[in-house]
Each structure stands twice: as structure tokens, then as C-alpha cells.
Amino acid sequence: MFIEKNKVVSLTYTLRFDNAEGDLIEEIDEINPENVLIGHENLFEKFEAKILKLKAGDAFEFTLSPDESYGQYDDEKLIDLPKENFFIDGKFDDEMVYEGAIIPMEDEENDIHAEAIVTEVTDKDVKLDFNHPLAGETLYFKGNILSVREATAEEIKFGDVTE
Image (tube, rainbow, N blue to C red; front, side, top):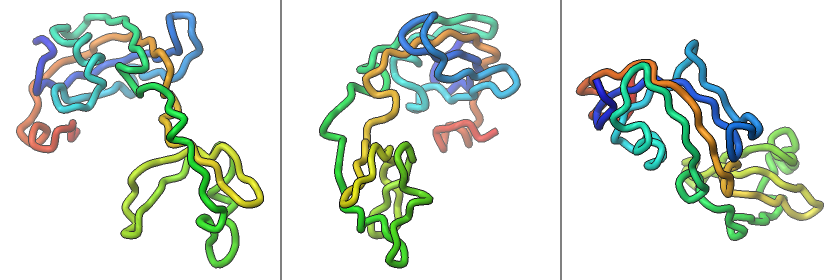
């Protein structure tokens, strides 16, 4: 069975910066493979295109540019917010808001709309970066297709693997 829309693919991969010798970002192994429904925007469009028509046992290896993955780094996604926005009961929340922390940003209804990385905490402001941590990076994937199966009606309805 080949990979195509509405198939569930189980795969392993290593993800590195730039090329095969780049620093390791992530490794998905056979113990905990990635299971993904094809054709429902669960993978980068170019990633999916590169594995279409592969089958169980096939290997893959390719690079995605920033424009094919998390996009270019955008300085306009750097925002300073007043430190008071992060006060709880009149005190700055230094347990959740510190340099390097990833914090969810909520609206008035407490719905999470984005995550930001705290890049600096000053006396007056909290500097936030709303870029994805891998924005602007070239990504190198090398992996194997473990299995391909038909998706269930429920998986197709919800657009994701239900396992």
C-alpha cells in the first residue's frame, strides 16, 4: 500500500539543522513512531509531497527550506509587553515568566492563541518572541516508513489519527 490521501502512516525520523551532519533537533524512533493522517495538513506540505507514493519499508531523506517549514524569522513578531501584564495577585509571576520560558498567550476568554518565548525580562517590560523556535532554519529529515494503512472514518472526520 502506498502513501496517499486518507492513509495513516507510521514513520521514524531524525531531524537535524541544515544537513546530515547538522546538530540533532529531534529523533522519533520505532518505540514511539510518528503516526500521521495524510492529506489533512498534519505535516508540512512539502514533507508530505516528498513521502507520497512511498510504502512500508521505504526510506526517505530530504531538506526543507524555512519557506517550506516554519517560515522565515520575522522581527515583527518580537513584542514588548508591560511587566504588569504578568502580575498575579499584585506580584510578578517569575515562576512562569523568565528568560527562555515558553508561555501561552490567552485572550479575554482565556482561549490560547499563540505561544511566545520570553527573551528578556526588564524592570518595565517582558520581551516576547512569537516566531516558532525553528523559524528561519533549514531542516534535514532522514527516516523510514514503518507502515501504511487505511484511515478509519472517524480519523478522516476529525482529520487526525485517533489511535
